[in-house]
Length: 293
Ligand code: PMP
Image (cartoon, rainbow, N blue to C red; front, side):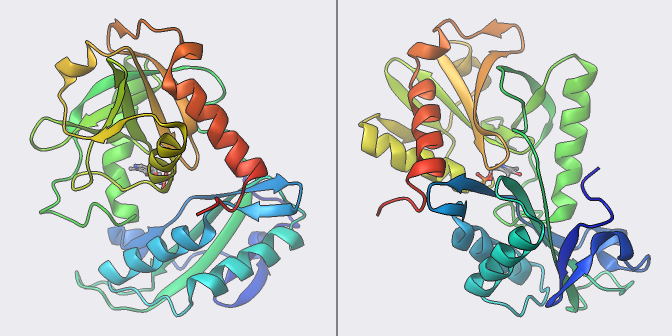
């Protein structure tokens, strides 16, 4: 359960009991998936609770809302401040934060504009737990960027992730790795993908993926650690010659990938760049948050 009888949410400028709120059954967000959201984490640090890259996440939320023509009348700074208040009121310092802007009742297939702005917070572990994750190459492709704004975090896009994750689970894998419309590797259902090969890291360029905030953080950490990281397209057959791989995301943090389909990555995780980056990421979110520029 994500809430109990005391849990407070933020809704259109007010703090309200989650248990007393329900969404309007006629909301366009519910009928046609016209809603945008974010996934953010707060960490307990020596300096108290710190939201990791809160402004970047709220900038992306406002960008996504703009793409879907949904009104979100707040600045990133206001939304971040409301979130700190909400965490405090719920007594949480190690939390997942879920802002959602969803379209109000409007049954036409066009944006009506009016939206509800909600923020929910709860305790949530890593998306894939603490172990290694096993990926299956999906038969589903990521949405074609000519069919939607793939760089916006739109609720409706996640039907694609659900289909891919269901298929992977049916085949006893932890998650799916989806290709783009050109049969290049794109990303997992809710995380970006990196592979290590011959002393370099590779990750797909932006264009057909969600440009993850964690992905960018990892590329920044690569610079700090002097790891060469290239944004390049690659194919499933390239992965089958790789030494190691990992996923990145706010919920996933840095998650080792042990195999893709039948191919087991040969390098022990502890010796990979992924392991060093996983440690550097944890150090960053707990001890060096905000990240030095
Ligand atoms: N790709 C998809 C499809 C996602 O849903 C997410 C999670 N937001 C990511 C990548 C990782 O993004 P971020 O690092 O910003 O959480």
